[in-house]
Image (cartoon, rainbow, N blue to C red):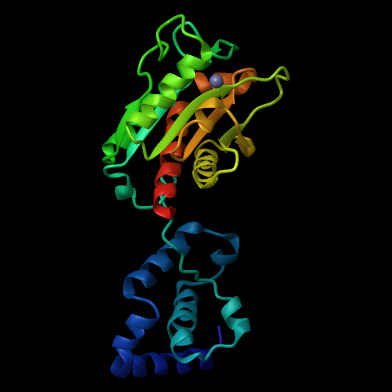
Length: 289
Ligand SMILES: [Zn+2]
């Protein structure tokens, strides 16, 4: 450590304390930040830092972080070599940071695909209708807690239209629930399948020719939660997307035909992650739209 440099900085610090303390604390770093960053640095134990004394670190902190920003007296090279880094507060790993109050009063129709006599895709001991319903019920409680009015097209293992109805009638029954309730958004939840068992990942569809914001936000947030393969968003002409007048999406949560993803889709923890992801995506959507 350079003794002259230290004496000069000590003098400057005394001058600062006497004359510019309010300026220093408001424009550069608070005492809390100084204590925090020194303790962070000590506990991180990087090999490069271990040889440095506490005095060295304090010197770097005072010189680079307080005097530097206020008087712009340090050259760039010294700043780059600073051993003390004021770390940003880490954001929550689980929820997106947007304001969920936007959900208050919103009418959201959740549509767990299939059910009853129509189990949807079944493979690897994973049944689509069951996965879809489980995630939808979890999503309903998250949305309801945030003040949304949630309407389910089905909340148990059954068809929506009367048993024995045609597929067209079944799908129209789901669309009609969204239309009659003047839903703000319609979210259909499905599990995917493919003859190739290697294929896995999340996809979100939106109606052809319409905006993709809801699909994009939901896809992004599901991936953030699950770290699953991104199969992207795509326009589609599925009945429930084509015939709903409000913004609508169809989420394909994963492939039951992929052994690993089938196991995940059966697990409570993974279903929670998907529900949180869709929830976060919806919050982001209402914040941006
Ligand atoms: Zn399906």
